Length: 302
Length: 302
Image: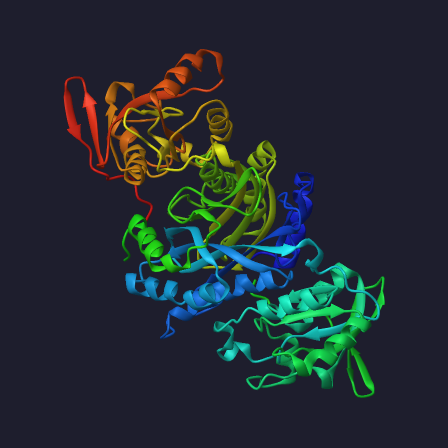
């Protein structure tokens, strides 16, 4: 048994602190790494994501294509969280004896929809024997330097937004990841989000990632949090992972502009709370007149 | 059971042929992908490599650090085969219950030597639960546009070279991969290799990859092939995988220059054969007066 992933990332960060490169803009710990490869206007983004049979999907689902769809969707979602767009993908697959040629073809065919939608090309990978089926994807994308959004820019007074209703993804929707790339691009081109993340661990856990990196305290307004029709309880909206919606902060002026623009866009964004203060990490849930603190517990794959 | 990896790569190539991007210089099927991200003088390189417990290493080795060393070494070797140098790494790890915190720390610590040697930074990754221990690495590097070497440039008259003695890696050396990045850089800066690959599947199998991509027939000279002291038979030099030496072709003029330079360099390169003709794929082994055809069989992980 090993410690949780958040602790693990912190370990790697400090273990290899001396190996930080000057051309690394954002290293391990955000949704994607941000690399300055020498372009005038753009940074490169790199994200990496693994899904494993029995953990993130079950191989015995009838439509094996959903496995490929989920793998691509999850890693593209990491690129969207930085405000960027995806370009290239590498795919490592660990193939056990129980996976037939036809299954593998279905898995890859399941990647097509998102690859075509976003003009992403598979340019490499590795297929190896393994006792368990896994897909490990790396995605390379780009973002304009002045449109980059990390987890660390949230400030007092920001509104907290989410790109769609939450909860209940585990009952099936988590396999049909629709990475919010158009939504993220709409935001960074027209507004100035101060911090952004995709909801993979759950609203509360992922909001805590922003609050920790930004050193802020926030409150969520219970009645403002949009509940997905698949959700069976409000707690699922708070704590269930793999919604793959964008969670972002934006200052009040921009937030009012975004709110005013909603009737004229094809996208839906929901204001769900506010950043109360900078300088201290914390989170509260306001429910009518009652305000309760929320701890950082969430849905952990690891 | 699935078909072999070479067939599989061919399938992906044709399946997603319509999804080829214009800024992809070399897509799936070479040691690294070559990407034109918009830099004046450089291409970006991306390589991906997986190693799995029971296939590429055994978790029960006393020094778990060697697992990390091998994972990094193998993917850096893919970058070297294009004539380039590595910059950033992402590391996905599938962690089963039998792996303790301390083991994982040793595995990561085992990466340090190569990371420091080549100034490579780990900028991302994913840790997930899995029934089997695996490491899936992606490496991003660069190569100057005029120094890029692929598998497809071998021509009639080229000499065939290897960067070190071959065979017997499986008896332990395969865990201590030393990616031939300085050697590759020496070659591309001072000479003009026409085709290059790193030997992971075995001399014959990997030479066939060059010959197929270059559409050439070649002969190897048995007495010229340097046998590693670990090798237990000559066949191991031909067919055993994971030597992680560079195998490359170079025209006669450059080859004579390289040969003449050998006494003055710290590197060792061995001429082991010649490209006999272009337009047809084939391989022969010359042993004194006898010449025998060699089929493309090699060491397959998959």
